[in-house]
Length: 418
Image (cartoon, rainbow, N blue to C red; front, side):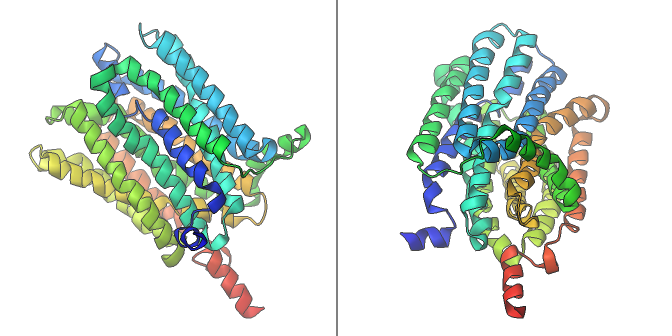
C-alpha cells in the first residue's frame, strides 16, 4: 500500500481529505453551469448576472488570500470548519430568501457570504499538502488536489445538476448543495485524523497575515506566480456568464451545455494528474508556459469558433472544449513551483497563490460585464486568449535557484556539488 501512495504521489495521511474536498466542491459547483441563464430567463440582465458573480468572486478572492495564513495561524481543520459554516449560512440566505423572489440586494449579500466558504475549506487543504508531501512528489500531490477540486466543482457538479434539475427543480437542487457540503466536511474533518496545527497566538496570526503581503516584496517571483494563477482560470469563470447564451444561439440547450461543460472538466481532471507527472519530469515552468499559456490561448479561440465553423456540430464543439480543458491543466505545476520559491513561510506563498486562485471568480465575470456591451462575445474571447499569452510570457521569469526544472532537480544539483 505504501508503494501505491509513493507512486501516485497522494500523501497517505490525507486520503480522506482528498475525498472530502471532491464531495464538498460538488455541492459548491451545482449551480455554476446554469445559474446565469436561469436568472436571465427570469428577467435579469446579463450585466446584473455578471455583477452577482463579480461580488461573489470578490469575497472568494478575499477568502482565498486569508486561507493560507489562517491555516497557519488557526490550524487547517479550524480554518476549514470556518469555511463550512460561512458556506452554509450564505447558502441558506441566498436560496431561502434572495432567489425565490429575485430580491437582488439580498441575493448580492448572501451570495457574497457564501463566497467566503469554499476557499477557506478547500485552499487551506493546499497548505496541508505543501507541508506533508515529500518534495519529489509535490507536483503529483497538488495534481491530485486539482483533480478532486475540479472533479467536484465542474464535473460532478455539472452532471449532478443536469440530472437533478429535471427531478427537483432549480431551487431544490440548490438546497441539496448543503447535504453534499456537510458530507464532504465529514470526510475531510472527521475521518481525516492528520492536522497542521496553528500557532494559536493572536500576534502570530497577525504576523502571518502580514507575511501574506510582505512575501511579494521579499520574493517578487511569488507575485508573478499569483498573477499567472489569476489568468489560469479567468476564462473558466467568465465562460458560464455568457457562453450558455452564445451556445443557445447556435442550437445548444441548457442540458447540452451542461454536458459539454462537464465533459470539458472530465478531461481537465485527467490532465491535472498527467501534468502533475509531466511537470515533475519536464520541468514545472516549461509545462506551465507551453501547455498552459500557449495551449489555452489557442484552444480558447478554437472552442468559441467551433460552433460557427462546424455548423453547430455538438461533437466538434465538445472536442474543441475538451482540448481547452486539457490545456487548462497545464498550469497545475504552479502549485508546486510557487511554494518552492521560498525556504520558509510557505503558507504566505500559498496565500498569494490562493488569492490568485480566488480572484478569477471575480475577474472573469467582471471582464464579461465590462466588455460584452462594447465588444460583444467575440471581443471578450480575444481578451481572454490574450491574457493566456501574457501568462506564458510572465512564467518565463519565474525561475527556481540554479534555473532548476523542479525543486527536486535543484536538490540533486546541490548534492552533486556538496
